[in-house]
Amino acid sequence: MKIIFDDKFYQSDYADNGASVPGRMEAVMSELSNRSTFELVHPRPASDDDVRLAHTQHYIDSVKPNRKLYDMAALAAGSAIMAAEIASNGEPAFACLRPPGHHASRNSSWDYCVFSNMAIALLSLKQQKKIESAFVLDFDAHTGDGTKDVLSDWKECQILNPYADNSEAYLKEIQDVVGKIPSVDIVGVCAGFDSYEKDVGRKLATADFYLIGDLMKRFSKKAAKHRRFAILEGGYFLPDLGKNVLAFCQGFM
Image (cartoon, rainbow, N blue to C red; front, side):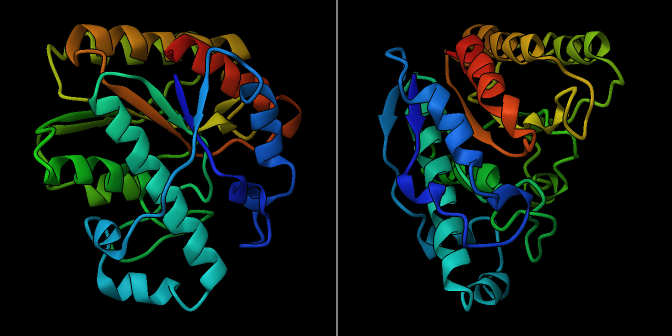
């Protein structure tokens, strides 16, 4: 499986929030970078044309004066695009990126997000006529309101943010939804590890992240000709973040 990552994501001075804290990317990559089952791929930044697929020019121009933030957000969006491109060819990919994006709407954003990474990636494939439909699972502890906003006009794109209160019901909710979907062109996952039992979500154990990854793998094999990719969203309990991401990736690959 391909891991999309650039050393620039280690930099923490692009912002001052939970997603930009020092050590966050190190916690993840210390687990992923030394595994022979993963191949590291370096991304290219998204262009303004790419970002305009999801955002207004007014919003893009509002971000640009903060050059460090804009450059990091463009690289994050580019990482998501690359993961989606790889997935469209039938190989799973995980983009380890920051800043996250699922709270970024067409003309605004909040929390730690800047550009709608998942939406940009999917709309890029759609523009190239590589896909006509998509399924997105967002298992972050917070609803991906930005992703929903940007993709709201695309009727063939279904988004699931599970709301169950415990891990057993949470996994069943995912199973029930994907079990009703006979086919889709690609599967995208907004992987938010703040749903962890020691993070703000307080729902899922490390083993549950493996099971979610495995669920999406099996669903993509059945319904999407193996085409699946995931991008990093939240996850702030650094002592266990790396092992949680690894568990998901091992199930997903």
